[in-house]
Length: 390
Image (cartoon, rainbow, N blue to C red; front, side, top):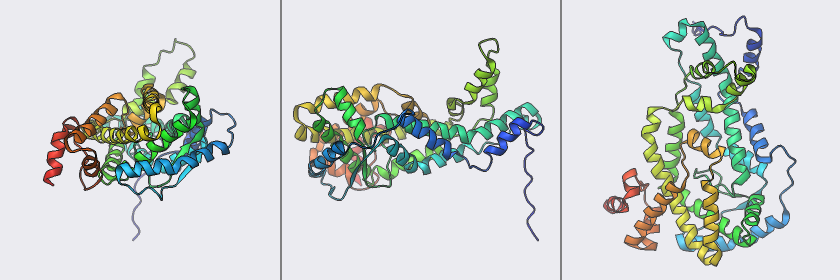
């Protein structure tokens, strides 16, 4: 005997042809609209302008410096980096690659946001039903626009793949040569010195995120964080209810409201996520701080007197919060600011002061279960006591 199919919910847009047509057009695309994500990523990366190909001279200049950065980061950390490839991409290529790399993460996020249940009050309120249906119908497109815009904005200013401390499965380092060159010109830094600094940062990030102490715990926490979002079908209705019809064009205000992904993002944070934030913050601080500590040590060798000036210029860019920083924090739980860098570098320096450079690096990169807890990131001695006991 065939299974009896589950009853489908009543179409909230029945009798409203315009909305019904939109619902049909958007149906069947899954929890996230990847076409919208790709389009907005490309638009954000290029600003809607024709993008030139990667400058061959810039690419060759970067490639010529790769062995130097590989050798020095490998020498400091004891890592074998000889087989790590480096490719130079345009902004749009970097955005497309990043969207693909983070696809499992964004899919987890979209799946979490598509799982809202209708409340008892909603079941008896036709308007609430319609707005809940509208929110659910638009969520894939809104999420596509949100993640695409975030990745596109990141492509405008990222140097490589480790500006954002999220592990990737692809072992190659992917640099945006035009961003590196533009930054060097803006801050009047010799181009080759800036390229060496970026290469040192990328190889350092590869080394830190390649360690089992950080890669698996951080990946797990980020995926748990995005999976803990809880959709609120009343969010759009509440936002629309707060509109002032006498202020400007009401239809334009509605369109802007429905097209603003922060409505969705502001409605879905959960108590579970807030409970996770201290642990995730500690892991991010450790990764960013340890990476920067390695870069500082290496760049003094390979860049010389410009090292501190480059680090300060990069720090200033970090603190200038962009829309992508807001989305990274709210979508993925990754907080990147001066406080995180300070906490991380102080933790690593605290370990180094107690056991020396070589032992500190070995302890941080080897073993298992050595990602610091919220208490340990503030007190390196606690971390050392735990590690020495294991």
